[in-house]
Length: 284
Image 1 (cartoon, one colour):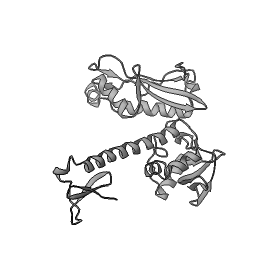
Image 2 (tube, helix red, strand yellow):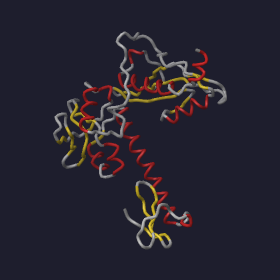
Image 3 (spheres, rainbow, N blue to C red):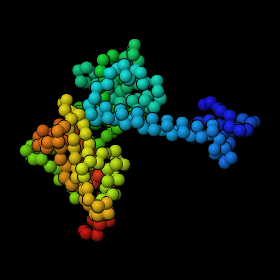
Image 4 (cartoon, rainbow, N blue to C red):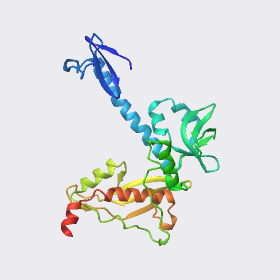
C-alpha cells in the first residue's frame, strides 16, 4: 500500500477504504474530519468507488460468459489475468477441454504457457485451447461430485457456477406446452416492489416482463416472467414463465434447452421468493 500526502498527514487505500497516518507514522482509527475535502482524500475515495465498480463488472462479465455459453479466447484471459479483480472473478471456475469434458479448476492464465488448472485428480496441469469454455452448471455431469470435490479442495468460487441453483426439465413435461405456472401468483403489495426486486436481482424489465437472456446452441433465447406494467402503486403478482426466441416468437417447452430452462426457472423462483408472505398466511 502506498501513501500520499494530505496536509500534515498521509493517506492511502487499504481494503477499499481510505486510511490515514500521522507524521510520526502512527495509523489513526479514522480519517480526520478536516481532511474530508482534501484532494488526496477525495481522489482516493473516487478510486475506491471505481475499483468496486470494476470488480462487480468483472464478476458480472464472467457470469455472463457462463450463462450465455460464450467461449472466451485464451488470449483474452491471459491479458486480463494480472488484474486482481479479473483474477478473483475467474479463479477456480470449472473449465472444459476441447472434448467438452471437465479439465479442472482455473488457477492461472498465460499466453505462452496456457491455462493452469487443478484437475480432478488434484494435480496441477496445463492446457492451451484457443477458446476457453466456462460451462453452465446444468451442463456439468456429476455436478454433486464436483461440488464435493470443490469443498475438499477449499475452492471458493466468486462466480456463481458450481453452487448456482439449477433446474432440470422434468421428464414427464408436456413438450407442446408453452408456459410454466409453478412460480406464478406470488403477490406483491405494489408493482414497484416487484420491479425493484427484478432489477436488484440483475434482470432487465421490458414491456411488463422480467427478462433473462441466454445464448444456447447458437441462438438467443429469452425467459420471461410477467410482472405488470400498470400504475406502480397497484397490487400485482408474478405471472407464468415463458420463453421466446431472438425474434420474440414464443417457444414450446420442448424447444427450450437445458441452460435456458434452468435460468428461466431460477429467475421465476427468485422473483416469487420475494412475495408478500404475510398476506398468504392470513389467507390460509
